[in-house]
Length: 236
Length: 402
Image 1 (cartoon, chains in turn purple, cyan):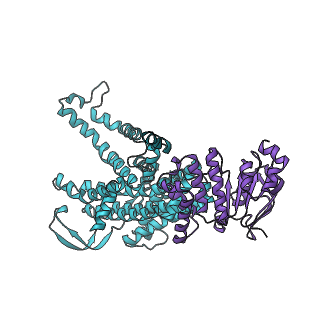
Image 2: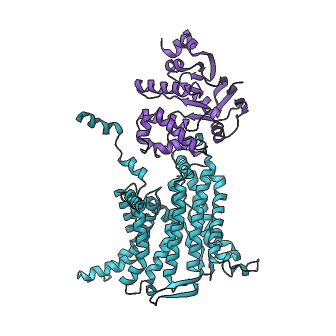
């Protein structure tokens, strides 16, 4: 039994089907990449796991528990946390308050303090800017803040939606090395990326989504080496 | 002593702390100053200020709904009405003439909280089905609610006294009260004190205490986990839900706490006026309170309070007195002909000002919003947002110097 088991989910926006019987798994300790082009259904899959959308068919299990139809705040409480696409920070709240919001479902002050220190260790920039309001951060800092916020929930599974979107190449490097660091401390990561090259480089395993269906799966290295993937997503 | 000194030092540059301090000092000395300035006949002004406190309470409550949680409530006066009528029913002879046939005389201090509780319940009942709506839709629903409630009270016949309303409500009582020169008497202890319209200073002091109580409560909520959740919902509801906030119940709490404050103010209003009628809870009340919050600085408690003071002063003192002042000004300038009405249509300066009262009010509102779009006393966050420079822009020149 894997930590997260998504089996055969169909997700619709009204009458438009965005995800077709997608099946994927994330195991403890893994980094799993979900790659695909625009509109392939990557974000929809993540939103469905978070409980912000519900599948018409199929089940989602976390730690053996069926979470297909429960409310997002309860899923967060179980330890599935998402850093959403476009960061979605609380732009008119301070960096500190954004991080505190990440720990919203938790009650132990001592634990929250420990995790806050850990986030500041990972992202020293956030510590410098902790009283600044999030909307005035630079793009890279905002991404750090979004990841920090997700980490504050002490996730059992961290889901990152396009963490490299709109960042300069040097910041993309930083973000992916932080993903490695987060994973090294034992947190499994489900990574959604258009930057397939980088994502597969970091990931243990990967899934390729195409118009809503998973068309290929394998280890990160296999996918990187695969001719199809290279042609479609790596531009080689 | 050092803690006091540190407290002062850390707050001396904080505009909110300064505003709280000035308002507290101003509130405490206001009756004495007014009595002194008017030679002991300032009771009317003290009473006017106590009524202003009712608006201030409502502004603080609406600030929770609109400023903190970002829910546009256009029917806020409905909860004010509910608080007033609740007080009227439980603290007068009125229930005796209804089919219940037995009047209740709940003491003011308890009835105040009954009014608050009933208003909060009404807020929760209205909120439960409607808070799933976002933005403009919620505004329309609350607008409708604000129109419905006074009409229900007007048409509920014997239960609410219909058009004339309910009169002869109980006044607050206390086991004792201090009297003194501020009401033109010697210092002394009055046993079995009853609040009457002859002692408006007592109402005024009561109002100050109620406001202080509500401010402390709301301030603590603002700095709590719930306060952060309100702001998160206001900023981005989906992201808040993704952080584990139960958005519906958090919004419901903001709505009911706002309603409770309004009901609280309503009960005080009923007790002070000793009379309620559905005429006093129209849309204009909701809009005035909303204007106080927006003008004062949305999302900032002392801002909303300051907005309430400024708007109340304009609406209930400046504008009613403006015609007389203009006449006085005209005659002191030797322009007495301005005061005379004239057969070719000039009605006299006083009448002109009196007719254009609301034009002047509108111009003042527009003027304030143009000069201070963020409000008179904005929250620190909003201020930073409007004045902050890009971090890179700040860092660059420093590198050049090095």
